Image (cartoon, rainbow, N blue to C red; front, side):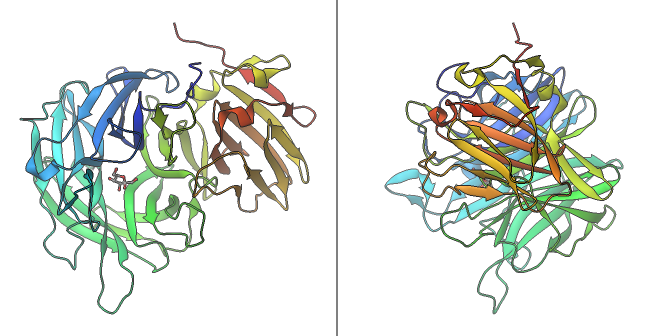
Length: 452
Ligand code: FRU
């Protein structure tokens, strides 16, 4: 492992990363693009970074894929997705043009006004992009403010179904007499992926945030799932206010109607650092999902900030959503470890069964099972201003919890009962270096199949 970064979590080569974008299996490898500000470890005028992997664990970095060139994306290539079309790939993203850049930092906007349009760009292989001649604005900035926001309509997720293309966008509207804005998703459809018609909109329930970012709609085991990243979902102080949630919904592709009461949902990750997930279909046809683990500042001695999570496998069983670690990640951690594992500096996997009242310590990081919930406490282990220090899952279905924990430099991901809940945290790397305290019967596995 390179000493100053995680080994199995994707980080930018240097500087800022946020949302995963354009995640797709294509022509023998997984392509992962991501929101990237290449010049400093802070958010700024967005580019798309690019990495590929054959096994979802080892990532290889490539040159920046997308960068601003047009008046409509001069201030950033925001989040978007990829689909295969013919022999190549087609990407959709949001181009933004700031109404007024901050004169003190032109990479950021003043007054939250990003004129937003949707852009298409094709690539023959996922590596070559013609940022100068290849971009095409396919949906202009919205004029009708009753439909959606001119400044906040973004993150196209595109898929193909029954011979047509569908695009879902996150948006919001300001209803008369309402104090806060109403979050919305907008659905468009197209025969060729170039000429798009508005199909339908869905909004719901006035407590689920003020704007829905990074919407994703997909079918698993015959059940539609809507994943959203609602902004301003939690009001309490000292937490990330924006969170990612998933809901089981009905979807009629013919009318674009979504059926959901807006009340039944689960958090995608209960650690509350997690945001802006995107799903895709893996080589074997499974629905998989990756999200962004937020960090506001680089850790001491690190040139990068933020990371993507391990890929997770989504299933629905008996009407319940499960988010488990991807089997290809698990398959890398098969060598039973000797004692002293926490000193090794390599990533490892812990398998343990916890009974009510039992705890685990990974150095100074503690987690346990209490009142039917898994909790994790990183008090004193992270200097993030808005970090949630204590997190817990909702009440779980079992009296004894099976845990699968991945420890990687500064990241801990805890999978409970085969994906009934997930909880991930970022902590200072040295916090995880101390002694491991595990319940009887637990085992640790090291990273076995290193790639040449
Ligand atoms: C979510 C998000 C997206 C946007 C991107 C900009 O984290 O705000 O809505 O496209 O990040 O970097």
